[in-house]
Image: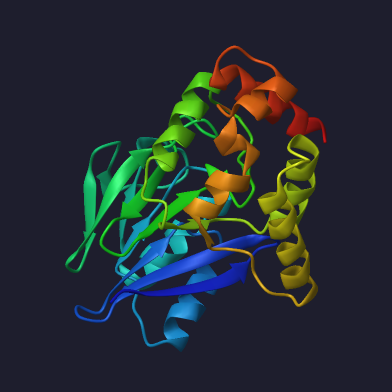
Length: 251
């Protein structure tokens, strides 16, 4: 079985190391802080052999250089990462990458940035989604368009409901406040928000999260729900999504 080590870094990022005990290979999923990744890997006796970037932002690819210099790790990333880091293998939607015998499918989840990708490992039941979707939220639409971003979220919605999503930031408490504003009558959301408050009061992470629960509670994944559309408007889900995203930006 793959081992996943999750740890906080920078102000609100999570770092992830994905380790295959059978081969000894370790992938760094994004690199917010190269020194911290090296420290965390060394503490476990792991050597980082690969880097899988989801998008080009510095809090996701800014540590590539330090890790590559220390370990010789090979960088797999969307082409946009070339803005800040050399890439050994450029990947896009439909490609696959491997760690030992485990295969990850590359999914286009653009919208936050135009080249954003996610890595779905179906045999492990996990997906690393970067800043495309968060617990009860989604990334800001810095580069994309509403239809593009909604199509990306729809690809995430199509994954098996028992998929565990690993997103890159601890934004959940703030996201929950907006979600309750967006969908105030959702009982499942109300219960989820209470659990989040309890976890954060104890200093516990709210990431990762099961996709199935997000499908019930995350308003950005429910922009085609009649109740959400009635409250937020839009003749098409992408229009409703755009209204939600604009409201969250001002919330």
